[in-house]
Length: 144
Image 1 (tube, rainbow, N blue to C red):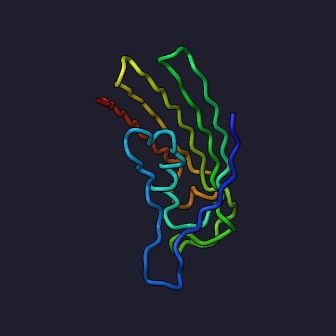
Image 2: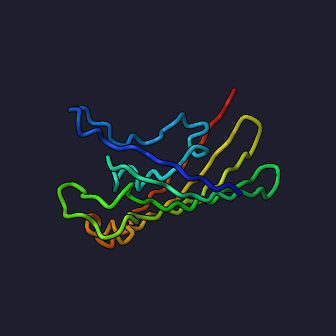
Image 3: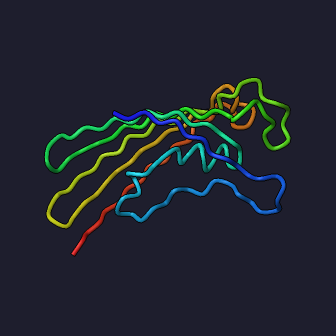
């Protein structure tokens, strides 16, 4: 079990550069180990300053099977405007839940399956409405 608090800084309005969110697509061999709020970060909050509160739990079924569950809450750094909208009433932008299953069927082979869903919080509904967003990712790797 692990708890995390993180702060991500968004776009610096004093420059012309776009310092928006970049998905954490690490090499396929360990990408799901470093996963953190991909849906909310890449499709909802984009360049906003945010605080993330996370819980992660893991378990092992046997020598070949393991899994993890991530629960994350995303808050604006402060009550703010978003893309020219009026200031939001709540800093709670959204929540995201992810489950990842890892399987090692034989020497040299690994695979993982990860599914996530994100829901806008009360501060995110002005941008996203009540629409949920989800993703399903699968990776197979052979080492030789």
